[in-house]
Amino acid sequence: MGYKKTTKYDYWIDDQTSKDYNKWKTYKGNPAVKWKSFERMNHELYRYGAVINYNTDPIIKGKGSAIFLHIWRGGTKPTAGCTATAERNVLSLLKWMDPVQKPHIVMGTNDSLKSVK
Image 1 (cartoon, rainbow, N blue to C red):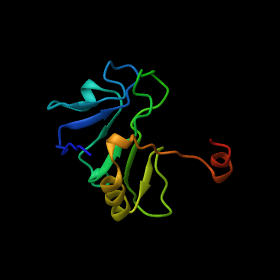
Image 2 (cartoon, rainbow, N blue to C red):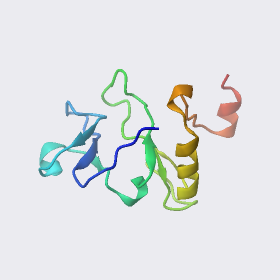
Image 3 (tube, one colour):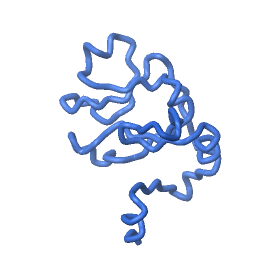
Image 4 (cartoon, rainbow, N blue to C red):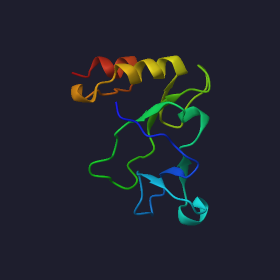
């Protein structure tokens, strides 16, 4: 998989009022002045990860943004909507994912996933 190394200037925008909503942006100014809500991409939990292409084509404001596969804070610590696991698992998944195969991440409860075809 291709990758991008983050810097302290990289953000994922979840400000629904912005034209940058649900996009990765590089910005060297004060992000709090430019956007009402954003994720800093240069974060220890995002050391390794992948963007889950949810609500990306087309982007619909308010439908959800900033959903990633990333390193967890611990097995009993929730995320704010992302998929997270141990660093070694994230690395293993990143090595396994082949863009040519169009990998998908499916999320849900055991019961809801039984009905997925």
